[in-house]
Structure formats: C-alpha cells, structure tokens
Image 1 (cartoon, rainbow, N blue to C red):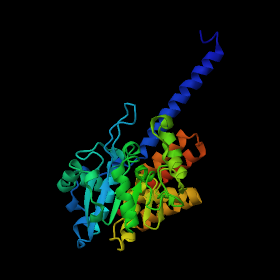
Image 2 (image 1 turned 120 degrees about the vertical axis):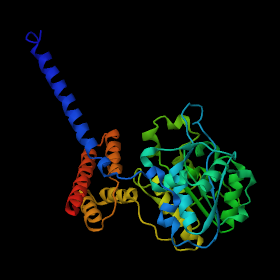
Image 3 (image 1 turned 120 degrees about the horizontal axis):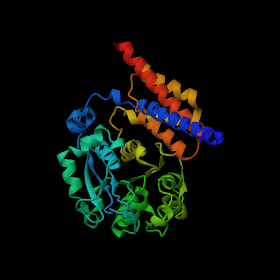
Image 4 (image 1 turned 180 degrees about the vertical axis):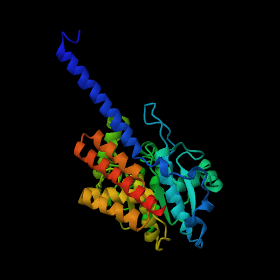
Length: 372
C-alpha cells in the first residue's frame, strides 16, 4: 500500500520522527529537574528545625491579624478553591519570628478551605502543617465580625481565589481596614488578597485606593491559568483596583513584586509573600530579623535578571550563586517558567529558559563533583 502512496509513507515517517523527538525532548527535560539532589524529607519539618524560628527569639511586640477566605468553590462552578497555604504560612512565620503574635480570622470563622500545591511547598510550609499551635489557629479561625481592630498593629490578607468572592463586600473587613489605616497601622495583602480593599471607603468619603500605588494578581496571570475568569469571578482584580482609583503597578508574570505606598503594602502573587511580610515589619517600625533566602527566592532572582538583562547575565548569576556563594537554587521554578512561555507561544523564551535550567543543572553537578 505504501508503495502505491509514497506521500503517505513520508507523512508517516515524518509523524513517527516527530513523536520520537518529542519523547526524547520530554525525557531530557525531565532529567533537568533536581530529583537526584533531594536527600531529606522536608515534609516532616518542625518549626524547631528552622533556625529563623528557633534562634534569636524576639520579645513580644504586639499582634498582627491574618485573614483568609471561607469560600471553597469558584462562583457557580465546581472548581474548588480556598486560601493559599504558602501565602499564609510564610507571612505567619515572618510575623512570629519578628516578635508578633498572630491571630487568624475568616469571614465565617471555623476551619477554612485550603489550597495546597505540593510543587510550591517548602520547609516553612511543611513546618506550618506540623505546627500544632498554627494548625489550631487555622482550624479554629476567628469570625471576622468578632475582631476588635484596636488590638492589632496591622492586618494581612492572604490570597487564594476564594478571596475574590467573600472579601470585597464584607462589611467587617471594610471596617477593620478603615480603622487600622486611619489609625496609622499597616495594611498588607498579597495575590488575590487585595480584593479586601476594593470597597473600603475612608471617613472622608474617598476610596482607600484612590491615588494609591498597588499590586495584585494581574489580568495576564489570571487569564493564562483561567481563560474564562471574567465569567467566573465577580471582576478581574487588576481592573477593579484601577476602577477604584488605584495606580496599578504590574511586575513580570509569576515573579516577586510588591508595591509599598506608605502604610499600604500589596503583593502581586504568592512569590511576593516573603518580601511583603518583611516590608510590613519595617513599616511597623522594626528591622526584619535576618532570614536565609530560600532556593525558590534565588530562582526568582535569576528569572528577574533574565527578564531585565537577558540570558548571559542570568547564567552569570547562576554560577555566582552556586559555585561562589554556595546558595541553593530551585531550578524547577525556572523550568516551570519555560512551560509558561510555551503556553504563551513564546518559543524563543521557552528555549532560553530551558537552556538556563540545563545550565543550572550543569553548574550544580560540577559543584558536587568538585567536592567529591
């Protein structure tokens, strides 16, 4: 049959070759991920295992309120949601390490729904899951209507897509934000957390957000992951913040970025949580306690250098971090950004980021070989 139809023969050959190439590329791509470098089980991490929490204990300096969503589904869909664990856990431990007691509240009180993405979990996040005190607080959150804002030096709104549904119209949230802001206290919100701010009106009748520089989960970040977001959510967060008079400060997609407008501190996405929480500590009036930068944060810095200066400078930073400074680098995050580039149809960026991932693996292997 193939002799009679040579074109079909060549089509089959080309198709089979493409399948083999894709399989080979997929195998090679997976080989770039750092499974061989994982030597310990971070899921059993305890707070006492982390020097940031167990050493140089700060005296009690006051209380900070953390607020999470009570919503477990996205609108009228069957898509599950909740608060993002990494956004709460990392802020919680920054506040605790710097001498602040943390109360956790939610619109309904009780145990709120949680979103746990295993690929984003680090030592602090597992420590939070293994922390009996933190877990009691998060499984028995205070109903937001029972909160007295005068007890707190600031409030932090964790993200999670559920916040888009039960934060914006909650009168108790509006009261707490208005009271704290007008009392010169600190307001922090990350990712979808700034949904808590969109309907806050100050005593002078003006929107809290009027002429404020803010960040939050961007339209591009939202629509790439959920193309039908405009029909699921009551609004797109970026659009709503702008409509309320804010100056929206948009950073690179899925990379650390915050806006700091006096007592109002907002972050674009989960990767902004560490620096946002530490900036809140500064704004309250204290120098944040030293914290060793995580492998994930180092990867974010590499990606930011790639965005701003290009591949060569990113490679130089990788070599500096790994070979000279002996810093950890979570190269799987760089690989994830290559996949995001492919989803956007940006093939040049995709191959550049794959090359960076491969380079990071090579430098890591050379470092290990030199130590043997």
